[in-house]
Length: 379
Image (cartoon, rainbow, N blue to C red; front, side, top):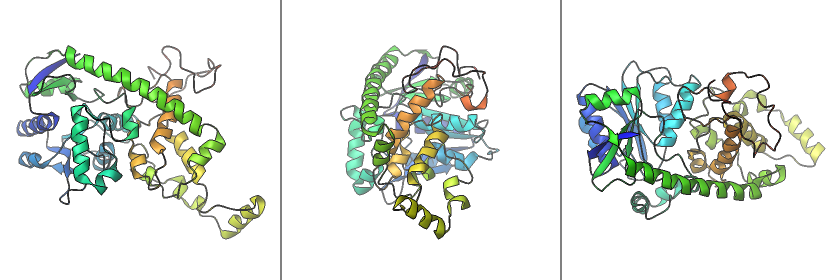
């Protein structure tokens, strides 16, 4: 992999500079980027047409108040007819790519920039004490603190992803940022911006791989502990038992794009007689009903495209480890097809093609099974 060394104080300053230069050069008509809200207790996504306004933005904020992929989906799901550049975390880029592959988000006029991500501060903690959240995030950026969110601590997709340009900061000398053109569009943009010739970026690659290895070990351990805690119907039901049926996890998920969710449809607005019948048959009927079924339905629906962004867990008012549960299920499901959500725009989602006797090779429990070479790789 090759990159271009760019003199800059940090990734935020580098991203703002590239956005401004690109808008002034006519590469993009607008930029989608986060900025701190006036109250100072959260961040919101802004669509900017004025390059000067970029100085007020924070391309890599401490929190993920809204998934960048969801913000992009809300803007561009019907097309934009304008060239938009969006700065997203790697998990947000991967979610945007999954939406693209499911024909929910056209990316023809969208230019994606990602950057090395140190994780995020839990949204609840940040809102309670924004200054403490900013301080913690500063330590995370410096590498002296672990990511605040549990799901981020085992994330092994925190760096280069399926974006057009990637900004690398890990293992790079202070005062420098590595700009990695990651697509033909990225290479063309780097040339038009006059960034210089790309060359080896061995230090950055070595640090990314080192952290990836550590994160993979952390993920394996987290999944092992979660299996002990939640594997099986009874333990899973206990883990999800405090769900209040708010459906907040569905509302913030960048992959949940159905216009009408079954669990909010007329089909589940049953008459009281049905509830009484259930109570008589079982001795009691829980209300709101079907909270357990809701989570099982979501797992079945999105596990092939889940990118473990953690938005669902941030939104949960009763602190269910939703993101960790879904991350475990997603890892199992995706491994069956040797598929990785958001890895490659050209890689087909396994549910969009048919292969005869596709899973005939499986002989072990699905949680341990892996697809043979080539399965799911060409669509």
